[in-house]
Structures are given as structure tokens and as C-alpha cells.
Length: 267
Image (tube, rainbow, N blue to C red; front, side, top):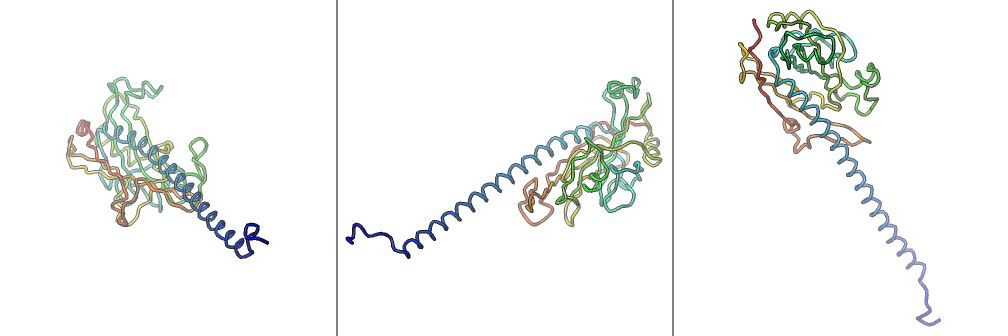
């Protein structure tokens, strides 16, 4: 047999096959990595969009607050799936499991307040509270369409809930009346505002906080929202915002706002 007709030896075939397998393995790893990265980007994009919508809505309501409940004020919410405090116990404004509560000023003269329909409710003062609920507790009790669905990898994440109750009165409430309302108890259920909220952790700024000097004045009262989202998908945590370091203080996107109607309620 001449050199031109010589075929590959078995060893050469095995070497070529090994090189092909190595190349195939590298290509498959690259494809898997690219797919995971694309998936992570999509999850983060979804979290960012949901955060922006919820954050803008919450801050718009806080901006119209006429009275912000000081830290430590008892807030008696109705007992149901939408008001279950993570870790148990009773709600107070502020606290380690933070709750923000305030009386929101109406869009129209209060003399036209009535609970008849959405239009007349715009003339009513409204009690609002924002607070976290453990995701698994919310999912266990919420009916459709308020139920985001089970996600066992994220059972211990929080959801941010909004409780709102219009006040059926054609005159502004007093500060004393607002405090009595919160202590006596309210009725209804909350709505889910934001999913996959990072639970409290050592060093992590509180999700919600308020500075409420007495008397409350515009510019003196300040409300801060510290958003940190965390969703586990197929064993991988995706966070929003991205976490630049190990310190939990760097895990949040912080926004502070000064309500413009505080100080307008009679004592």
C-alpha cells in the first residue's frame, strides 16, 4: 500500500474522536451558560419592571399623605391571609417587620365623599398600610386572581401588601380619630403589590421606614422605601438590584419622599 492510500490508524481515530468530544463538551457548556445567562437577565428584567410599577404607585400615594402613623403605633388589621405578620405577633407601625401606615388626602373636596362608586370615593380620605407577608402564607389563602401561584423555591420570600380602606366621612378626620381607627380595627383584605421581596436580614435596611416628628410638617416627615428583590429559579438566585458586595446595606434601591399634605388634619 502506498503512502497516498494509507488510512488512519486506530490511535489516530481515537485521538480525533477525543478532540471532537472535547470540542462538543465545550460548545454544550457554552450553550448552557448562555441559556442560563439569558434566563437570569429575563428574570431580572421582570423583577425590575414589577419593582418600578409598585414603587411608583406606592410613592405617589405616600406623597399625598395627610398623616403618617409614628413608629410603635398599634395597627389592628383584620385577621386573614393578607395580613399575616411574618414570624407572628401583632402589627405596629415601623418595627423589625416593617409596616407603613398613613391617612391619604382625597383628590377632590371631602364634602363629596361617598362610598357609592370609584368616582365618589376619590373625595374620601383613605387609610392605607403597606407591609410584608410571607409568600407561602399569602399563596395558601389567597383566591384567584389575587393568588400569584405556588413557587416552593421562594416560600420564604415576602410579598408587599397594600391595605386600603376609604373613610366614609364628609369632613377631614382628626389625628385622634386616625389613631383610634387604627387601634380599634379595620375590615377588608389587602392586595398584592410586589412579589419576591427579600426578607429581613442582619444589616439589611428595613423595607419601609418613616421619620415622623411631632408636630408633623411638610418636609419634616420623610418616608423611605428600601427595595430588594430576590427570586430563586432552578436553584439560582436572581436579585434586583444586582448585589455589588457582600454587605446587605448594598442590596437595596432606596427612595425617600416627603409627603406634602401632613399637618393638615385637625388634632
